[in-house]
Length: 155
Image 1 (cartoon, rainbow, N blue to C red):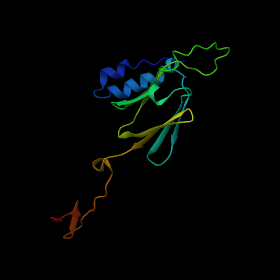
Image 2 (tube, rainbow, N blue to C red):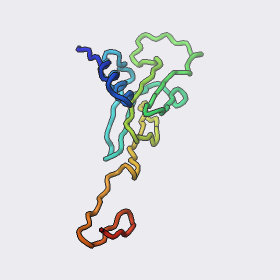
Image 3 (tube, rainbow, N blue to C red):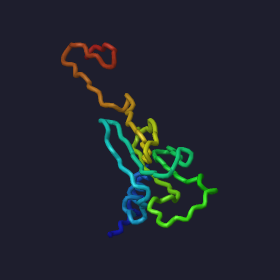
Image 4 (spheres, rainbow, N blue to C red):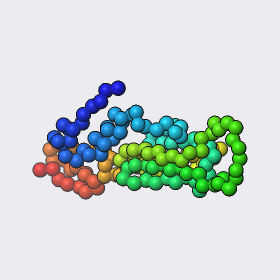
């Protein structure tokens, strides 16, 4: 795989640190863990769902944290330490994990549910009204124009 050097971009730009950090993470895909497996689904125009396979984990073993546009999911089995069993074949992984997802601006976690060994994390993108596009009417001649509820006379 090719290695890309993003250092020249760091020297000539200001305020794009998060973007370049995300690019660094995507470029170094060799270090990305594959456990636990997950799906990312689009459930609506601005709604998403991350489904993570966490067989053998309970709600007490899992933690979900959102900080600075990063969703971090951690799993560490706390139970079954007193139970001693001779395992002949272990196909269900019981190791701890930490998985991070980079969230876009205005994406919020709305809920999480654990059912049948799958952890579902629901997300929604809520764009503030000030950031949404709006139509501006153009006045011609002596006609009045309405901008944001106020009537103004054209000059």
